[in-house]
Length: 324
Image 1: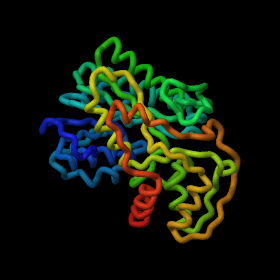
Image 2: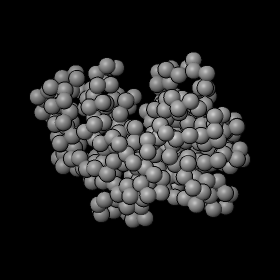
Image 3: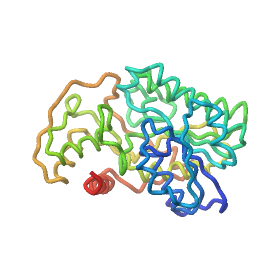
Image 4: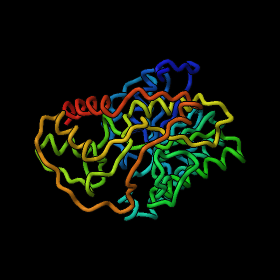
């Protein structure tokens, strides 16, 4: 069943933190298209105003410019909210290695503030973004919930801490929480700019500009690239999850496995380019291979991802062509 068939009470209010970001803005858009109310909280540090300008005049949309590191802001944002979709976080493994204190404040303390605000405002469900990075150096494929290794970066540590805090809020305070371990999400409105940009939008932009992209390592590392529509589905279905699943975390991916070098040539073929990549050094803290077992999410959340890498990448390319 598609998330577009989900039904909530007519006056349902969703709070999307990090709502001006890539994933957050797609969630805002989907909720509005379903006919429900959405409140966006974002400090615009990594999110972009242009991502939510599409909704600025929509009667069911409201925006709070604020920082999840401020508890008062979180409390205000949660007033009257039914469901929290907590996406606010700083990503990027390399950047977390450079700024560990900031990542702790923003990702861990920010999430803790949101959990407390959700508890005090009696939010029905707190759905939050975790990450495949929590699997660390565990080499088993596919990655399965409950089989995690040693963490490889401060970013991964923040996501593990978020999961542990969410469990505590479920256990001790009765707040219903669901964690979603995203695997390499891509799609429309993902930022292609900057030193820490995700690989797919960055490569698309460089190829469109006839530049030679750099692949970190030999290109033989693999990823479970996950199109944004699958992530939207997971978030909204998590809101309808039974109470006995509270405190759990679920892999959210397509369940595929693409090698970076193969992904690169899919892009060049789709864009009609014959540009060869540059191979650079491996990035510190990166996981070599990533492929998700999504059976738990399928069984308990009713998650049925409809967008394969092949289907999603062509839609993403068309979006970047039209918007760059």
